[in-house]
Length: 213
Image (cartoon, rainbow, N blue to C red; front, side):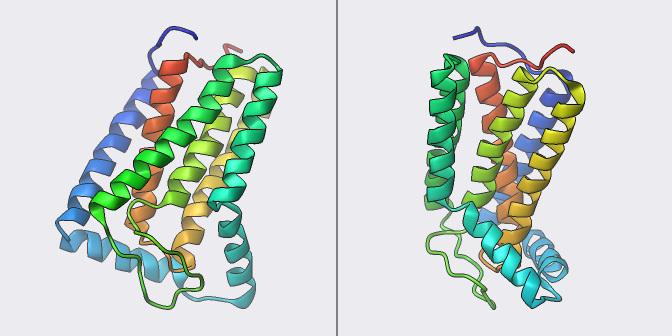
């Protein structure tokens, strides 16, 4: 395993911002703060309405794809591929970062114990709401791919194209969770931030650096 290395300046700034946002939202949710309620209600109105049949169908399908089973299969297959290519750091990173991050997220859910929204749900999910498991799962898994693309893909335009698509996919996961009515926007934002925090910690621990070219 490579030695622990520092994040870039941009990554460090984003890491600090993610920590600050997560702590702020975590505190606001625990205190049942009015600003969290106002933020959630305003964003819910913008995201959920107006609803159309085709939009509801597409987003219901999309959010289901990021359920635990499909994502677990992707992680296992990806880890096997990296292992067969003798990329040990990549294997451990792709396997452990999403796995450990998701476990910690379940622990935080149990502590906060925030009920899910109940108004006009398009789908039903059990368990607690904060942080969003789908948001952190997408950030951890697709974000891990982004980190590995930065590490292994030499051609700049290929990195930019791949990473742009992956970032949009992550954002759409969060959007879909609010749209189908199973999460508050603050759940999703907290999940994104927590996922990014774990990604950067994993990148430092496993020594994955951006390619020079």
